[in-house]
Image 1 (spheres, rainbow, N blue to C red):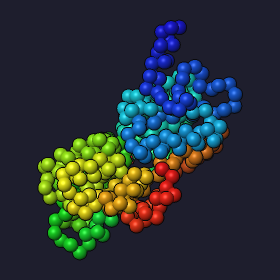
Image 2 (cartoon, rainbow, N blue to C red; image 1 turned 135 degrees about the vertical axis):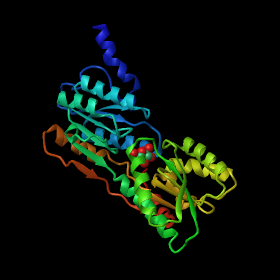
Image 3 (cartoon, rainbow, N blue to C red; image 1 turned 60 degrees about the vertical axis):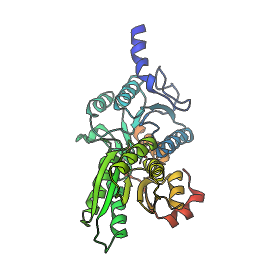
Image 4 (cartoon, protein in one colour; image 1 turned 90 degrees about the vertical axis):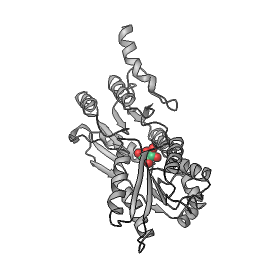
Length: 323
Ligand code: AHR
């Protein structure tokens, strides 16, 4: 008995949250409350913090019991959390996969246990789509394309070389793969736009700063920075200022997310263009959870509505920005 209890409790070491956090014992508390096990990527960015809040607030509002687990950007922690949710017999499992590959085994375990799974924010690359009920989130390829489109227009009619450096998101994650692809596809239309360096900044401010410092040391002729999220862009701004250059002027900056800090930097002229990626997935997720639990059919793919912001648009949007 002691051994079994130890095995069940071990995966929960990675769990955290707001008091709703995962705990041992039966998932279904006996009343009619739906129990949702949610495995979050981590707390790497302002976007992620807003996403976690949206999920926790919406669960409360919907009367859904949330078992929340923070994977600290590690796939093995997410797999442990999902196994723990299966052991606890939660009603529904939702998660935002840190990377795209390597989920088939654990998703099959959930399916065999009869627990429906919903993907939020990020996709998995499994060809077996019966392993999950729905995927709710952004189209990251389109986000990359929007960033590329803006840059092509910005340099339209010019033929001199434009040197671009790229700060990629977490290696192997859907947003890093797709934002890179969408951007590259669009700038291919203008052969003078060239990516001269591209490296991961792991979606964090600290890593964005560190990698940008290295880029600046290696290249004296950087014209543009494309960062896969605001946080890396904000870290890079510190590096650019530290090198005595003016962000937004000496080096043009494009980022993705549109969280408040990013929007403020855009309004201040330090960023030139932001592609929005909405973290407010909670309300739609809770609706899906209820439908899935009731055995109703749900859409296989639910796309988030998003826009883009110029410096002027950021000034207008900032006062009412929610996150
Ligand atoms: O998956 C969404 C991405 O993850 C956000 O753009 C980024 O900020 C976050 O870390």
